[in-house]
Image (cartoon, rainbow, N blue to C red; front, top):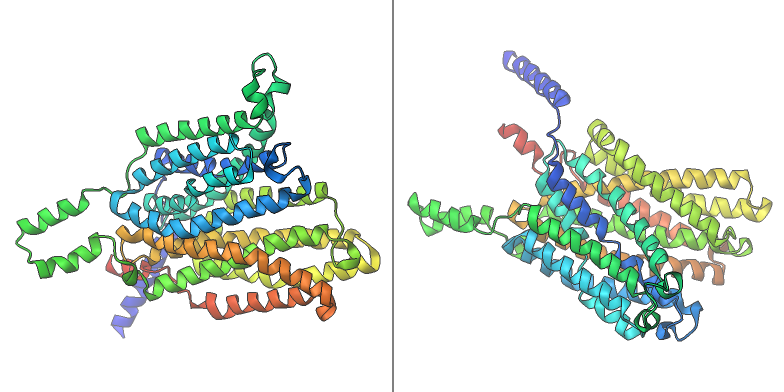
Length: 476
């Protein structure tokens, strides 16, 4: 009885200490460099819509095909990402993050310059195979530069800087395109007339080059290359046998792929891929729903209105995460925050047929706009889940030297989900309308069922405590 009483007092004391525990300050310089790299990642992809819509021979002179060719380029990029992400991630576990990041920045810079020199679709598509965006490494490095007390704060900054880069990219394209017309005194040569979109690509490449120099000079390696040699020397000096060393090496060296497929990794990555799959379908379906005429199940909005709606959502999500995500995570924990955000998909897919029915009966009135506001708010809640599942994926790695491979495995699955999700959602939308399945609302019924399965069958498998935290606490 006394032992139970003592245990209760110790538990209450530990709970109180954890509640009042102050997070470790973030390494501002190192986190700042990682966020800079995250900022430049969307810059190259923001330029090729300008090139595709130009008078060059890329679309064969038919501007109506811009969307088709842009989608084809995105598909090519997803294909290369799926093929290469795991390989580059495993390489980074062996040689370090910094060399791979630097190689990637060189590839990004070269590819965007080739974009600007392209005059046909096939020459435009070639750089896609050499570009290597770094966004999957950013999460790994944030995880390595933070601990359990400040990781939420680190992850909350990623969507903000990504949104800033995605906003600056099109501005660069619009400001520096066709310089021979806007600045004829400086760019009046024949070269600028033949390649009117090379200057914004050059500006983008210059920003990437500056990031390369900063990374080369100031970024610290989070995976020292010589750690294995030091450990082996230490083991040899203590007379550890090869059999004993093998058990130690499993904790200090990158693991083979088959050893990565343990229960925590499988559950964490499955939830991440499911989240990306649902979000990709929603991201493809919402603009389509807003643009389609009311009589075929949409809202009939103009492109400008759709742009304002999506821009409002993006800005709101970034600001909300930067301001409140750490506090929400600290208050509710990773599992409850993830489940709550993921559960938002259930009412989201139910609101689409409600808006369509109201619009067909009474037009786009204040009720429809209010539901759109609720829908966007729920989507902001969904975005909170990314930071949570990133933490689970990072913590699920069998050892720290396999973080890159674990994250690469998750990004490979996510790339497949991003490739399949939009095609499936838009195809279901068209099929529902053409065959009048469930009054044209069958697509929402299917997505509702998928979201329920993900929430109530898959997401609940995540542990209450992030992988390893409970054991770490007990060991302390």
